[in-house]
Image (cartoon, rainbow, N blue to C red):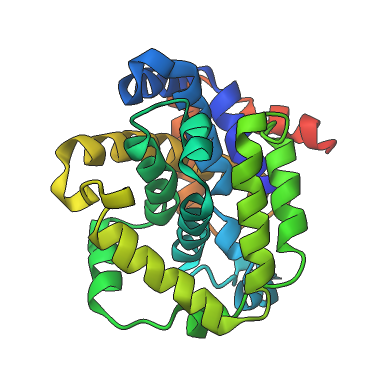
Length: 273
């Protein structure tokens, strides 16, 4: 929960990232830049909800300073849930969520960014071409994930926006139906694979066939990945996790280039540490 909220805060609070996010938002939809900026933040807030799976939750622990959590394929679960929620919303709700008549690109960004936030298109090709049982790696969704999602959306300031309520309601309803049910989880993953990745968002062009959409997703994804890396690095520093020196050096370089060397201290103060 804290990591997802923190990732949103990093994009908002790091001036260099916020300005780049505003540029990307204008490129996504120049007529509705504010809504597009908000879309970037919403993607960041939802990117890790797939970690609410049994095996991930069982494996979240520190062992000799090294994280032993099982992250494998959590991004697929996150995107499967988001896509399922968008599919269940009616057209009016989707148009209002994205404040646009041409909402297909924005909807695609909201699904693709969580899906690709750790891996490249090569990994998606592997996902498409292999018959993977995601639940074998993840286990079913655990009880309590709905509460965590509500905390994330509240913490990111999304629940106060009426146009987000249909999306959040659908996500929570879907997650409740997935609790402890491997078969339903596999069904949502198959739906993502065949109806979204292969055919494209609501019969729009798939990512692999659209340079424009690929460019928008890549730009948005870059922002989320940097914010994700910085927030995780600051959190590990607080927990005195000493096992990832290379990632720490990369984060310190990013903070230096962004002139944000005190970011971790600022985040710590907001956590009350």
